[in-house]
Length: 284
Image (cartoon, rainbow, N blue to C red; front, side, top):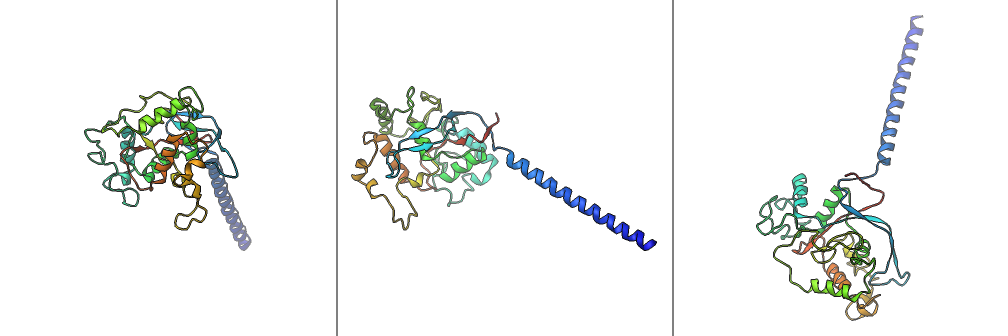
């Protein structure tokens, strides 16, 4: 009788262990399911919706004449010095005294007096410059966002104040060329002082150049050390003949500028802004 009771007790304990194990598995499953269902939460809604459409790039691939751009959110303004100070305070490895050379050259945050203090000629509400692609990418990801692709940036930047696509408007192109021809100022003005464009985005032109996520694909189509499929027609005089709009000189300059960059470069007139896919959630 005693042996039978002990056997029943062991069986009950095994059942309890089994229930606990099943409960733990269900809890993990519910937790993971709820985690997967949660959209990425964006910290700021200071963004505008860029409704998707088709974009004709400067250089047309032989297999397609236009690129389809899905709808996305874009920051209204470039990221400012003030915002970047908060970022480095929360992420110390991106301070100028601590950043690894692999991720930024010697000019990283050059105008800042210390790790978290701007210099005398640095306007807090002006766009941050002298930041590498690595730092810009990390900033956007910490905000739950990402850098725009070239297609997304060009798609949004082709809009003037009243036209969705002003790339055939010579007056619009001349204004951009006029800005490109001016020397970089010693001190940048605050963001948002230029007129917003058709989408409600400020300073796409007229303040600083901006990083894109895929800047390195401008002229190189494959692995840079052994690229056998480089489009030779993009170089030198051939570049204008194969372009979709040879009158869009500002676009030529942007493509040339991007092709000269490396990810660790930091330049005194190169900043960035972030974008987000529609699947993400704007929280405030």
